Image (cartoon, rainbow, N blue to C red):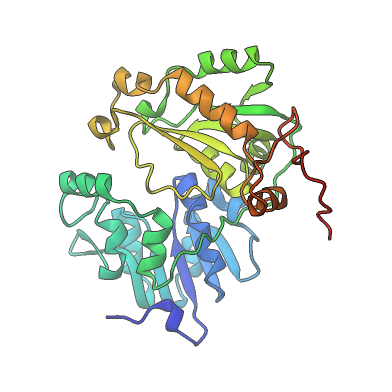
Amino acid sequence: MLPSLSSVSHPMNILIIKLGATGDVVRTTPLLRRLNDPITWLTAAKNVPLLDELKQNLKCLAWEQRHLVSNAKYDLIINLEDTPDVAFYLNTLRYERLFGAHSSEGVMHYTEDSSGWFDLSLISKFGRQEADRVKFLNRQTYQELIFGGLGFRFSEEKYVLPEPVETGLKADVAIAPEAGLVWPMKQWAYYGELQRKLETEGLRVNVLPIRPSLRQHLADVRNHRCLVSADSLPMHLALGIGTPCVTLFSCTSPWEIHDYGLQKKIVSPLLESFFYKRDYDRRATTAISVEEVFDAVMAQLTAPVRGSPIKAICEKLSVKPRHNAQGDGPCPDLHVDLNS
């Protein structure tokens, strides 16, 4: 049994391989708060702007630039990809310890310490059907599984994100209806109806546009009081930037997502029927009602943000905090100097 990273005292040279999807890259960044040694991160080219210069000890390169780091010797490689091309590349590297997927004689395997995560994956040693069954029963978050395998205890370490590039797009509610081609059943059927219902209440609603820059997309998410989306990149950006969100889960695991006190999860009553299926069935996109999502959005708009000094004071004094019409004002029943 290899020692946990938390017990290693000498400096280490670390390589992280996490290429995509972008949301999965974002939710891996809490590791950067626990790994203080020199880190090289190989990722998809489109994700480099999210990782580049995040920390002084981090060097980020696109997968196409992997030859630039092939001659180094690594104390630890963390490979969170399960594809043969990445596994083949690993066979060309020199390292002391590997966490994650690798190949032997053309067959994909993974290290024992990473089994908490990869037992639920496409390369699970139990096969796809059993992996999906166990994944449905799993109640640990992605961060808990990865941190635990590396010998850490996940303590709500937050995402690490770059500074947004301002776009000027602002409103009360942001809707991000797109979820990519891989998961067509994430395309909830009622985003348009939800938008009309919210606007009837006098709320300003934007459907988030496609941006040329991920950092502009990050600004769009930041500039709204609540984000409504499926389990997708905008959700992860909201969790990272501190924007309350309402997230619809129709075919993927809600339990793997750590909510950071910002998220209201709405789980489809048909989740088990469509769990991790990548085809399309309209029933999956219509199982969650407009009324349930609307009520969740309104609750998020009036709820105090977790960790705010106002909320902490109100809880301590057993007073329910209230907000002004914009949802961002203090508790008017209290006259407290927050600077004292």
